[in-house]
Length: 305
Image 1: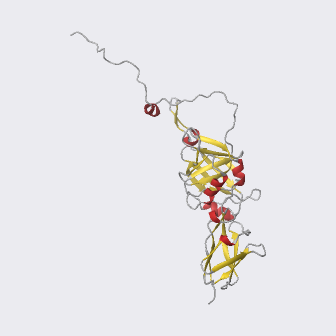
Image 2: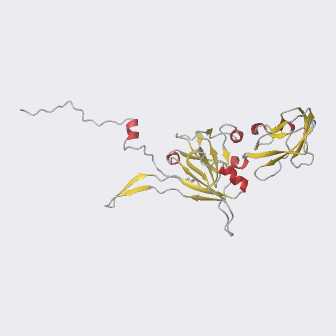
Image 3: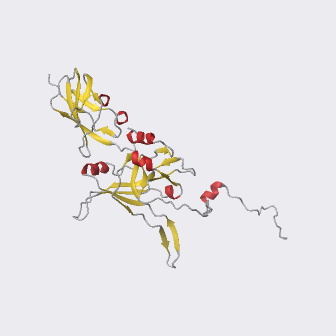
C-alpha cells in the first residue's frame, strides 16, 4: 500500500492567548533598564492597621485619613512609633536533589517584629489586636507609606494582607535594657508587595494624623438636680482632657445649660435643670470638638430623691 501524506495539517505556530500565557511558562517579563532612582522602602518605624479589604485613594486628604481613624465601622488604627524593628522574613525555599540540582519551590514569607517602648496601658491596648487579621500599611524611616494596589497605576491604597498579627508577652528589661512590647506580624501573600507594591511620601500626614485615644469619665462628688461634676482622663496615661465644650457632653436626663472647667484640670461642672439619676457620656469621636479622643462608655450618676 502506498504511503500518503496529509498536507492539510496546519504546521504554523499557535499564538498563545493572554490566559494561556498567564497559566503557562511564559511570564509577563518587564524591561529592567537604567534608573537614577535608588529609593527602596526602609525599616518600618510605624504602621497603620486596617480592616480586611479597606481602601483609600492615594491622593486622599488629611481629613479623609483622620475620618478613617475616627470611624465607628471599618476603623483604621495608627500605632505609635516603634522603639526597634527586626526583619525576620523566611528565606526563599529551594529543593536540592541528591545530584546537587536545586529547584525553586516558593518565595519565603515576609515576617517582621516591631518593639514598642510605651506603658502598660498601651501594651494592653495593643494586645487587644491579637490575631485580629486585616491589613497593614507600613511607614518607613523616610516617612514613606508602603502599600499595594493590585493594578499598574497605584491609585488605590490597600494594606498588605496579614497572615499573623501577634502582640507578644511583655519583654521585661534586663537591667541594662528597657522593658518593651514586641509585636510579630507576617504577610499572607508576598506577591502583593513584589508585584503590586508602591510607596508614596507620607511625611505631612505622618506628622499630623492624630491617633484615637480612649478617655474615661468619672463622677466627682455628689450630683444634684442642677449640677453634675465629671472628670475626663486618658485611660492610657491618666492625662486630663482639657477644653471640652458643652456640645461634647450628653446627659440622659434633664436639660444642660452650660459646661465649665474652672480649674483647667479636666474636671467639668455640668450645669442645668431637672437632672435625675441617669448617665453622662461624650458624643462620638467623629463629632467631638477635640479630634482624636473617644469615650470608654457612659458613666452612671445618682441624684438623691
